Length: 493
Image (cartoon, rainbow, N blue to C red; front, side, top):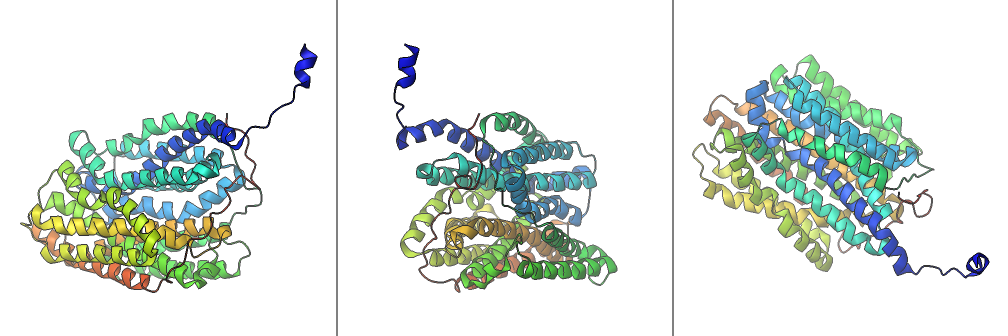
């Protein structure tokens, strides 16, 4: 009887059956990577509504508050592509877990910080963890999901990131007001501790055996961006002509120049400069950098204005930011549909123009006795503009490169957005400090108004650059899923 069983022919599973078998690993991958990316994206903005409480508790000057935000965004930006390359070479699941461990531990250190310097250091380590987690979460999800269902999964993954941006100021404000600002960091700890063993058990390991690390490129861009941001953040405190500021700006610019040269000459750079020869790729990346510069810098100041000048509690400030940050949940899907019909360029240009108009409206009406009703049109315009920009920008970006370059193109754009956010906080806060300060509601308003005008001008410039994007170019075909050809992908446990 046993012999008869061994002689029975085995039937090959159908495609539908194969996808059914992958359903459980795919769901686990979507849940685990989605939660991890939500935490990393949330920490970009969650701290903004807690800044007045942090300043009251730990002290610190304006530049210290800037570093509380920028320590995260700078390390996140400069190490994002390097973190992805580490995962490709040494194992994506292994490095993803390492990123989770770093992020979770740094969150606990931030919550326990007894001084502003300790908080800034913990935020920098958080950024390192996020730089490893974010790109690998997308790759692990792509590996786990069948090609037929990948679009849906990536759509859900993107919506989770949008939800994190929308909820950041509200979650930060609510926790700060009702418990303490430390809980914006404690919140990450139990989530991270739960994710670590689940990722180990439920996600499959994968590698890209032919991947190489670009250590010289990473060192050049890391040092360069740190020098430039350091100079901008400390310019008003030490003076634009002081030795530390000039050294940071000059040395940082030289290192960034070295990184550009390295990108042209190296055989396998982390950022191939040849991609920027395409007018569309150059235009959409410059537009992204400027969009985030104007938007992040403005949110940094306006979230404090709502509390320090308008007199709202942290929770009330977070709620009142929702017409701006939360608009993406409603408008972004519509923007994607419209861009499929008429092309991405006009939607991107319209979004940037509305964002610039919203910031300019804020700058025109801002005063110490400003009512929320007067602010609301500016918040709505900014929210619609930001939302119109997001989905079409990704579509335009991917249409400018071949499938083989889509991974590096996506990493480049993500890094430039984070760099733009860090520069936005540094530049607009520098303008704020030069023209006003924290002394009284009037001085805060006096400093915020010119900063917002500059933010509006920068985003308007981004809209002008977006007009240079090619017309009617269709998105490139999706790249083969990582792990389906060269990668080694054992079965999920």
